[in-house]
Length: 79
Image (cartoon, rainbow, N blue to C red; front, side):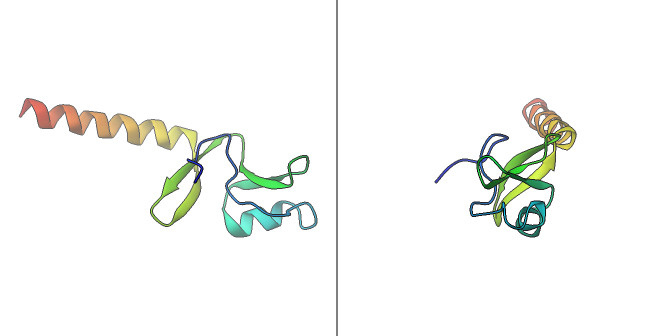
């Protein structure tokens, strides 16, 4: 199994025939790479492994939630 990140495929399979619509149906905010014939997250998004599969989330929200998690973690140690 491949861990998801911004450089990994979010949906495999032949997408060139259908284009971006093929990818968007499987993973919102993704696009079809015509050179690789597979789906990747759009440039402003990163691939995140969720319990139910891979999603493409905005880069900014990942930073925000990571900082929020670290803040909660720090507060749990100080209290």
